[in-house]
Amino acid sequence: MELIPAIDLKDGRCVRLYQGDFAQTTVYGDDPAAMAVRWVEQGAKRLHVVDLDGARDGRPTNSAAVRAIVRAVGVPVQLGGGLRREEDVRAALDLGVERVILGTAAVEQHELVARLVAQFGDRVIIGVDARDGMVATAGWIETAPVLATDLVRQMAALGVRRIIYTDISRDGTLTEPNFAALMELIRPDGPAIIASGGIAQIDHLRRLAALGAEGAIVGKALYDGKIDLAEALNALEA
Image (cartoon, rainbow, N blue to C red; front, top):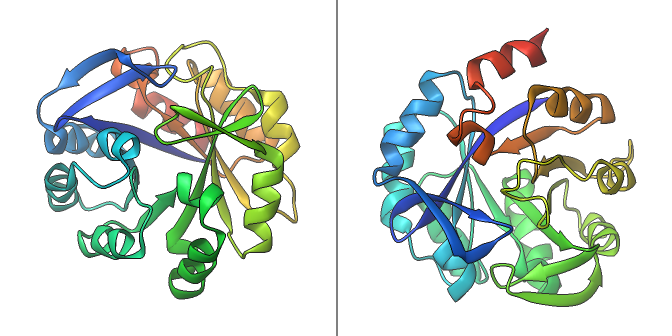
């Protein structure tokens, strides 16, 4: 299972939110590229970057920081946040990111998702962000009338092969992932699932690997020192 450090961008800085609440923001650094280099030097093989301002406002906002991250590291970067138009997706790919993550667009624009998957294949990931089983959109501010499990099935029917599942109530809480929800989503014949939200210890990573998750995105636990990246990578390899 792949362990992917998260870099969340707000106003050009590295931050973490508590349960997706913009009013509960912790700043961890003013230099996102330096943070990216830090995780790569500790062994990260991929980085997960989210433009939080973009997710809230519906358009990419922190592109300069994203470009700096891509230029600073030699590992693949996946980017989400505010990618709701085809031209924005293309611009993101032109920045050098390997994968783009669609969230709100997956709920509201199935035709766009199908078109992008046809063009870019595995470079398109769907972010399914759920609160009490229901999908949240617009930077987690709004709730759509669709179950997370239904959205995963809809996206699979469109040819999507990779899903990032985030339980918003666990995100930034350092409690534990929503293992029950993940068990519903991880299927041998379904899209690959990357887990996000609530990961606080190496044992959580081992359990996610045992469930069959393709990857795990870790943010606050790394920034607060609850998980040592190098140690966690060694544990997963073992």
